[in-house]
Image (cartoon, rainbow, N blue to C red; front, side):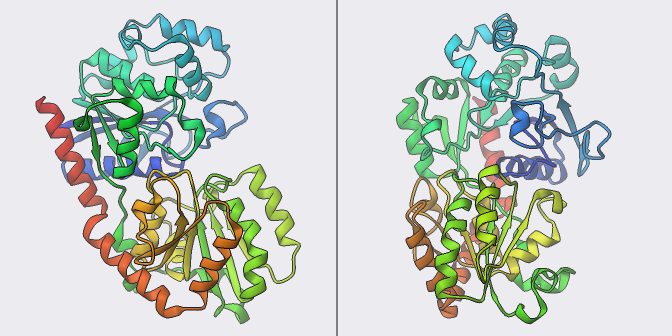
Length: 430
């Protein structure tokens, strides 16, 4: 095997854990394994664009449109003009689709999620993809998974999916939509808990799901490498007289599922017990988050710094790395994480983390060893955990050091790619 076709839902400058996962796999497979690697994806940048024309897309004039870090990218425009019934008819006429045994009801649900890319016909597949040995897609439950299966059938190559299955979120548990995952030759779960849940829901063999966690660029986030970083987050964003204040960081999609809104609602309770603290949010925003943020900002003694991906240059952006190095605590009490790359980034910087006691997170965070766990959306528990760490430097250092050691040994991207390569090679031999 020497060539891989990756088919994520979106790609950089789109930023989330799923996009970063594919990006780092693709870059390392090309640079270190000298594989032929290609990215096939939509032109969506934000999640809204997967379904609606008012969402943000990338134009072909953008410098990242067809190449990122020397990787070839084919971005297909999302077709917003067809009705659901028109899309349904076109897909059901595809010969390879008929082989998948996907019901009309299931297909409708995936088409509603988007992104609907209707340019993937026989001629496009032959021109773009016919030299690849394997196709690897992500993430559930979006329509590019079905397209990946169609391409795999058309080219007679294995199809792998890393679904990033958020099994604590009820909307991911639709039995009709889940059934599509049975069509893949192999599934990659990020945790043993995710694998167990998928096995139970899909009733598939143990060997059809492999556990490979997420990774991190350890050297970049390692807080022992401060001399190499030209940007200091606190010096840049904090008021001069308050640069000794503590900093609590959130990095992710700013919505209810990720716990960002829960954090906002907890801030008044925290500053009532610990006043000299800044709260930093980095990631794509939502209407609900912005609404709650406007309320919290009106309160006395509230210090919030809010950054979006528009302020960043990528996964190794200096502002982001410096934020992890400068913070005292990383807080992401999410219920929608199959793993949580940001936890690894915080640990690589030697910082303690706080996550929610739900889904796969209790497997990722070892409670009271490298982080703390709280009940999802429980402002009292979040407050108590944050304040306990803000007031206890020794505990912060202990948890952060344990996380850092664990990441350095197990969760670098190089190790993740090695394990993924083993899975690819094994699948090829079947």
